[in-house]
Length: 258
Ligand code: URA
Image (cartoon, rainbow, N blue to C red; front, side, top):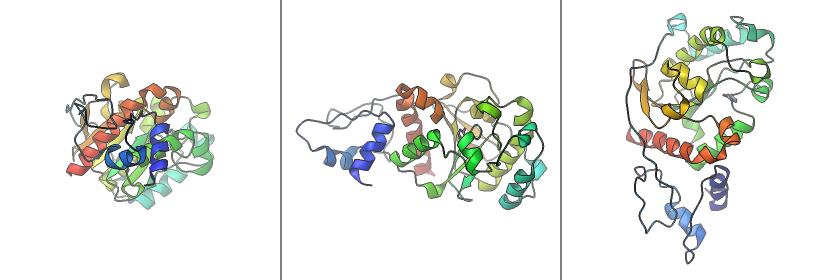
């Protein structure tokens, strides 16, 4: 990737880059920018020209989260999408312009799960196309996660009015679709964005600050789950971007081991 663009992505993410004064920044970026293939930098060598602040990443496992897609167990993705387009299982069907089924490769290695469509997504029928989506794109590009190996979906397929939090009945009605998507795609890693998705997938109401930085598994296949902040939250709290960066590196590390 072009160095300037890469630098811009890192800037967008709020990742500070320290550069030794006597070294050309361009070369440094190519050499060491973010060595994503390497283990997480628990200690930082003095010879590193570009240094990410280290942060420990606690690996824990917990009971597999729920898995309950029997409702749609004989559906493929096309049929499931069709079902979602016709869905009237909750009140959100009355206010949606478009349902937002999900987007990406049917054989994605990484599945990203957000909360619910916003106004832009409702208009376009695609997930993460608004401001938060742009930040997500930049984060994925910065970590060199190729879009072709990614599938993005949400807990809810329809937009809650005024972007309010999803209601319990809406989550209950909608998540069998998501569960079937996960079952069909069989990702190697699930990246969970934000509190709502984390609470559903892990069946907990622990604060996100406690959940992120830990690693857990989902479902019968024990798919590793990495939890991170929602990009919309990062737009409001850019000082948390560094932690997200650590989470994305964890994703990359899991993928490289599989
Ligand atoms: N926020 C989400 O959680 N999902 C989207 O698709 C867009 C914004």
